[in-house]
Image (cartoon, rainbow, N blue to C red):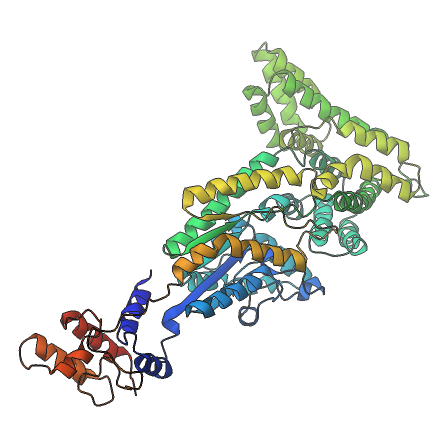
Length: 594
């Protein structure tokens, strides 16, 4: 129990069980309710914030940004608000007022919140990108006060619920795309970001195509090939992402404990919003449609920028052959690296070539290796590297080989490009969607998300055990059947109910109900006696004079009559001593009873 609450308990003892004294204290003390306030704070991402419940423009959703207005009037349908209503009802029963504060931060990952709690001025990277892109440059400045909000409200919290980790997994891929230099990936990432925030497919496609159009003169076949490699490898590091996510959630728990070591912490698990069969199939189709359109447009933009289109706008045979040749060279380098188990010396060669300015340096390196060493692996690698005429193209290929675990699937892309280069746009989009966008579609549709969420929950249970937090299992809330990953109103009610059931005993331990004191034997105080315990001199007030009477008695300066003794025994233990005097001193120094 916090110090101020122990003091509140001492002050409440002044009135014993005397009905008249209790009435006087409740009616006249402005601080009585404040001393018995239960503070609840919610941390989380857009789920806890209640994003999407308003069903409006995403840039104007009330849960998008924490403001003073939002703190004063939080989203009512979000589970922290519903849970606060439960706390208020329990508080009424146990004599406590309740203050609920929702500090959930839309588009924030656990990593972002951990940093923002610790670092003044820190802003969530993904949230900043959304605001600056779709609200206007500089709009992310509104995120700066979050550190101050966290510090203020977490410091006084009795209970903190934390629901984080999902964004670190589901959105871990999107920021890599949105923040990258590759315009094709930026376009695809933008469209996926829009879908995650509940926009329709047409709008999401439009957002990505706008980026393709803005960069159409600069998109190269290397950009397109790298983007395809990214798609094929999208789920490679799933387990590592989950472990990293759980680590950042633990960081948030520890950051909260540093601010307020006395608060109870509830670690709320994650659910998979896409685990229904219908929702997964619908999402897979939507993601394929979106990414298929963007990648088909990007393929044409790359062909156009490299003079690889016919007068009718179709990709030329030479252009497609050139693409096949590039992919073949990528696979050659990759095959050599795999053959020699990514030999460290071969990796060093790739590192060196990545820093060269022109192909003449590659030729000099090949001559040096040939003259000074008899190493078949190095000679094999150099033979492939020398097939290139342009150092930039070679370096982009090396970058793809080093970045991605599996580039063999790129051959499938070339099959699609060759087969559909003369087809209509719709057929090309469908083909690319099936061959290139499928991995991302599966990821977003939940076929890969569900195992990740289950693994994350297992890790969160471990974090709860390590940190002393209480794990709250919400995995089995009703599944969604739409594209939006946020729970609907019913899902929020279910989470609030699970919170209430899981934390009920913990909350009651905090909301201490003061036991009524027994009346003094032989000194019964009538219900009609309006003189409060503590009014030693009987003047109708509890003042410093009463404290002086008791102190004088204790130090032998003056006696107390039997009547005065009855009202001087403020702690009700049948003895008047220094404890009674100190309680009166504190009481009269802080409260003005009239």
